[in-house]
Length: 94
Image (cartoon, rainbow, N blue to C red; front, side, top):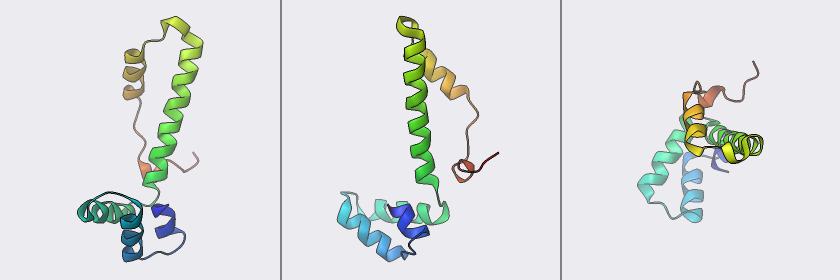
């Protein structure tokens, strides 16, 4: 919500901080640091969520295909070997 508020709805930094204070248990310093990160890295939070969902999808697929041969450690090793995608470019079509 915060990323959308800032970059699509035109929230100010203070509006965003106020929203976070009302909707989280984080300290003021944590909130301010996060808001500042969202300001300079638009789209980073949704990109991380998209990545999380994709990894979960891949895990379900691997578990289904490999059955009892599925090894969570091997899966994580394989995922971690992949080239990282910068959050600011994860939404761009290639």
